[in-house]
Image (spheres, helix red, strand yellow):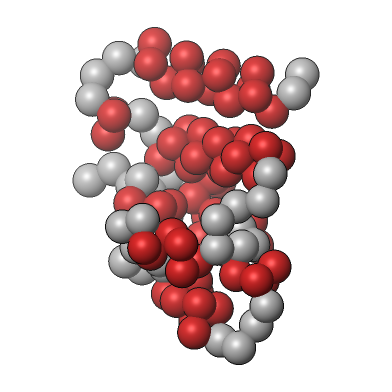
Length: 111
């Protein structure tokens, strides 16, 4: 089964759970986000961090460091969530102790 099919199944399962989006478990929301990011990366190169900010999106603290660092465009278009411990905690711990602003995995917490 490919990532796109798995992602669609995760989204369908979340929709079937009913209730508000906050009612979905933190781990499920995190896994859906991770699957969507993998699918996006499989489609082609991600936009770089400066383009992300220009489009009106915020960066997490780690992405902000990379954005101002003197590194090449490949490093600035890398999906840093793939190597962040916040993703691992979000996917494996319900309501993980994450408090960074602009971290999608911290924003998925319930309550």
